[in-house]
Length: 390
Image (cartoon, rainbow, N blue to C red; front, side, top):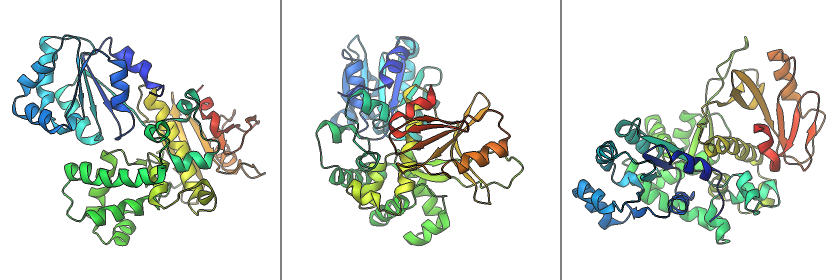
C-alpha cells in the first residue's frame, strides 16, 4: 500500500464520528486505504451480487451479520443506498465512533443519499488518485512533468508497473459498462464514449455545451445530462470563474477539466511524454494536472475545494487559478515549459495592477527545476507545488 496523506485525517475523525464515508473515483485506492486503517472491521463488498441481494432484501439482517463488535466496511455503497436509512437507526441506537465505514464511487448520488440519511452522523472524505506530494512520499515521482501528465495518478499503474495507456482504455470501457448504466439511462453507449473523447479534447477550455452537442450529434439537453454523469463519477469537474468584477466584464462560463490527466491523454491517443511534448493540448493538460493537484491538497486535508477558481475577462486577460483564503485572493499562473521568459509573469503583472496589490502574493508554477523568489511573485517548480500551501 502506498502512503496516503488523507490517512491521518481519516484516523482522527474515526475517533469522534460514527460513520466515515470515503468517496472518490474507482481505482483511487479507497478499499486499500480503509482496509489498512480499519484492520479489525468486517469487510463486505456490495459489488458482490450475493451480498448486495441480502442487503437489499433484508437490510436489518445484513447489518446484524456484519456486526462483529469492532466495526464494518461497506464497500461501494451506491449499490445498496437504502442501507443508509438502516445505518442511521443503528448508529442512533448504538453511537460508536468510527464503527461504520462506507465507500462510494458516485459523487452526486452517494453524497445526496448520505447527507439526507446520515446528517450529523457522518463525515465525508474524498480520495483522489495519487498527488505529487504522495508520489514524493512514496519515492515514485516520474522524472518529468510530461511523463506524470501522461501516466496520471492511479495507484494500480505504479504498484504493478502496468501499461498505463491500455489500462486507461480498459478503465473507460468498464466505467461505461458499470457506472454509466447505473447512473443514467443511456441507450447509445458508443455516442457516450465519443462524448467523453470530445470532452478530453476540450480539457482546460471554456465549456461550450452547444458545440459539444453538435460535434457529438446529440441535443444540448442530452449533453448537459452526460456532463452531469461524468461529474458524478469523478471523471471531469467544472472549474468555476471567480465572481469578483474589478470593474471589468467577466467570463462567467466554467472551464472543463479531467480529474486525471492520464485518462484524458489516453482518450486523446497520447501514449508517451514525447507525444505530449508536441501536442496542441500540452498546455491545457499541464494546467489540468496542476489545478487538479490543488484540488487534491484540499481533499487530502479533509477539506473541500470550494474556494478554487479561475479568472478571465472578455478582453482575454486571464489567471489560470485563483485561491480564496480568509478573504484574500491568491493568483496562480501555470506554464508548461521549463524555461521562463521576460513575459512569463505578464498575467500576474496585470492581476497585481488590476487588484492594486501592495504586496504581490501570487505564484508562477512551471515545468522547470528551480524555485525562485521575485519581487512580483514566487516561482515554484511543479515538483514543489506543495510550497504554495505553506
